[in-house]
Image 1 (cartoon, rainbow, N blue to C red):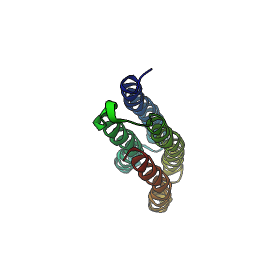
Image 2 (tube, rainbow, N blue to C red; image 1 turned 60 degrees about the horizontal axis):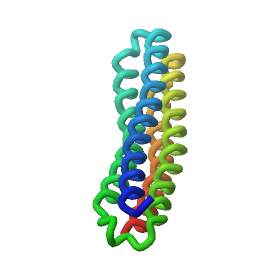
Image 3 (tube, helix red, strand yellow; image 1 turned 180 degrees about the horizontal axis):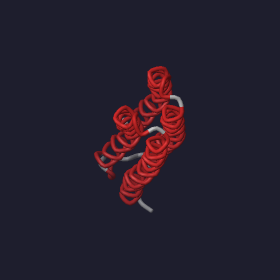
Length: 152
């Protein structure tokens, strides 16, 4: 496959996987959200607010994939001297995206689940979950920087 075909393939895979994984993680968060509301219906509004926030944080990983895909598409395939840089950039953001997304989903799921069980601790769960997700998100940002450096 020439550089042009490789260039389009990696951009397409980045977007396709971003949509797939973000959708899976978000589906799981919503499933846990519904379960938490069933356990504790009077916390419905707080749980919905937290769920939206957790979905937004999980979605950010898909945005990083989009950025890398757009950067790959922005490259002129005829001047790419080393097509493996595209692959390396894609792998950097893909691996980070998968792991960061899994951990953010897990944090969000557990927080929502525990908020439904222990409503008196919802503020504590919220603060700790946002802190945990922010720290987890930093790993994806580091890999985004690596991927962009590989592409520039």
